[in-house]
Image 1 (cartoon, rainbow, N blue to C red):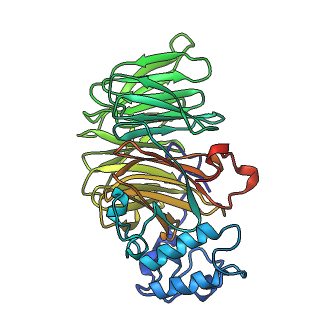
Image 2 (image 1 turned 120 degrees about the vertical axis):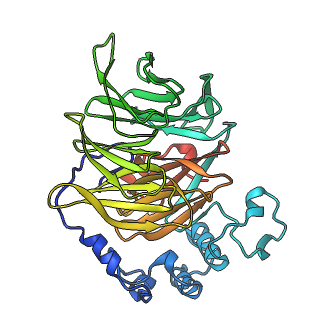
Image 3 (image 1 turned 45 degrees about the vertical axis):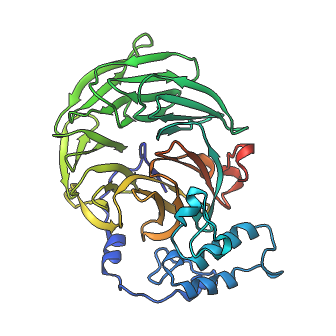
Length: 425
């Protein structure tokens, strides 16, 4: 499975959209999967109900079936199981008083007292320090430090072995976004992009922009940055003395570009003008304009042969290729609130999972292609930044400046790269 917010090595194919056609024609009220209750369902997707879509009494039944033989609260996974069972008993809403730190009802409270709901993942750590919203997170490949940028004008560097902040860089300007490629870390700021080589310490200020940079992407040895006037600025790799040479900008959007992603041979851009544009990475020409959202296109990612987009219009749209090669909507998922960001990765069993951050301070986790709910994350403020990493790690950054580290449970040991301080919460 190949799913990334930054780039994808899987190109569009002319497969049918059978998965999503089945979703649209499925019964609206299927029964509960008895095999899932016994832990034996192997269908993906299954036409019967699983997990978070089950009514409360079925949650109880599933919890009893998953109880260790030596009784409740026993066994190596008891804390996770007990947390999930407590969540199922109390419903799906988190207690807003508990979130604020002043709930007085304790165990009698009918709402969740937890930062998450689900049994397949766990919170490892909360990293505090930023004074304003987290706008970028990066864990470069092979690095032992985590980078985070914020609207407070700083970049913080966190030691992955201790979980401590080891350096604070004051940039004297709001950080709008992050991206990294190889040894390079790119920081989008007002009127400029800062490029740092984390291996040799070289740094560059890449000029040519006007206004805050809210999105960047790297593809085909080029750096792309979305500008507030609707253009996409392009820099090509140059010499060692001048590694970033400006190329002709991409024009077409009528308002600011706020999301970018790269699939095989294509750059996709989302804008405040409610459209998505598809650009050929070799010719840098627009080959298609996608119209379907009715509000700002906040985030884009590539998964398998699909493009997935989200918007403040409360929808996630899945775009698939027609026989002629153009893209069209093959499935639309609806949320109760506007959607701010998307990311994706594999869970501990290798199943693709979509992370969907909503404006109600939650992140919903959905298994693809069925959009079966796998869990939910909660925060004091809206989460605008999502980032995944090797070894089952993923990160969330909220508007209050909190950076939270999560991981999937039962991730294959030979793929885990967990820092010592992040092995337990």
